[in-house]
Length: 499
Ligand SMILES: NC(=O)c1ccc[n+]([C@@H]2O[C@H](COP(=O)([O-])OP(=O)(O)OC[C@H]3O[C@@H](n4cnc5c(N)ncnc54)[C@H](O)[C@@H]3O)[C@@H](O)[C@H]2O)c1
Image (cartoon, rainbow, N blue to C red):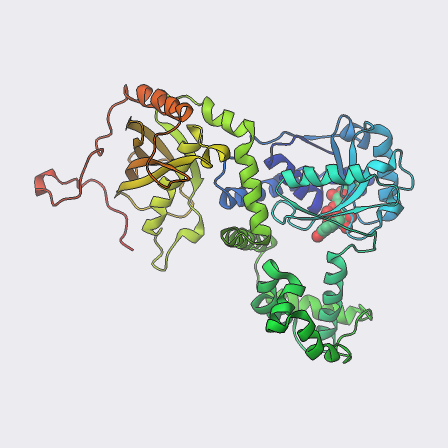
């Protein structure tokens, strides 16, 4: 990475959390601290984004020069300030020092790659890869070739970014501002005019996006939204009806309000009142949480950026590293298959962690167990274990920010069934806040009926059950729900609050 500012650090986080080693050159002394802070935010966001195990983090090192940074690199990502001269000089140095195969990409928001290629050696491996902030969460990366870029370089870059969970859009033509910033700039100009002319405040302009069009844009974009507005008649009907209105001089198009001190004061003042004392760190956290929520909602719909997220998760699950890691652990003790922090959005209207979240933790641990015994993307085409019964004991309340892990003991198995016991363990707590006993049945994916697990999976289950047979049987295993004589009742644990 050449440049470790907002964008360079975002790239660092995306690469590192995908298991890629990163070397950064940035002469600014405060760059490492900024990088570490951003990396912490990205780790927090990924912990909420996915339960799929991530590969071991890549290593982050700092280089003293461009040449040191690019040595042996597979890909160089330049993210220095948007000044042509500076970028051209650094890209020229990088191209002279990097190996011939190294891809060299610029994060520029609008400079044409042909211009940036001018002083480079082997410019055919250079292209623009324009990301969006925060780079570790927003999947879009616009790829734009210059006049001397080889098609092979664009294809190679696209497959690298795709493997990092991104969605590359390859431009058909080299244009200033690429696609996204051309659209955003038109909106941005008009937004400035509306505030400049006192037609609306900064907050009101933002509200008409976030309460309206912005909600649609995440999954339909502009054209598909308008197509629906045209009903059965489609886009043709829509334009026949509303096309004439496009001729009305509503918007200012390329005119830009003069950025006088007075106008800047007005914008700054309204922006401060909109922010209402919240710090940048708070706003960034809120932004990340909303992005994660959106991506997850879109994943459930199989739509747009959610489908990119699902594809990335499938890719992580099917890498040999993931299944090897799942198979390697120590099986003489209960398996530790899930670790996480209780997130703020697990709180219900009463201020409690909702009881369904306890089951979610155990269900996620069961999913992790299935991966451990070899149920990967390929196996799922033939079958998997389904949970048919859970006995969940709520023993203590959970709180936001608690660090918890689930340990899992296999109690028994046969060809089709798997009997297991989970305990939820909280850091600093001597008793489990919850336990769950489950029975799973193996089901054939095609017939939908119970069926024997395949040999490899059964052998793995058998090995763990045999190892766990030496462990003490959990005292709560085999309990039933019933009214017990008061002398037998456990009174030491306050139960989780009822929701
Ligand atoms: N900020 C965004 O939202 C955004 C989005 C997409 C693309 N971009 C593009 O990404 C690039 C970087 O933008 P940014 O927002 O991260 O800027 P930034 O100012 O936050 O970061 C630039 C970094 O480059 C470093 N730098 C300066 N001179 C350098 C040199 N000679 N060698 C190495 N590093 C040097 C600076 O110390 C700084 O850390 C720009 O081309 C910008 O157009 C920005």
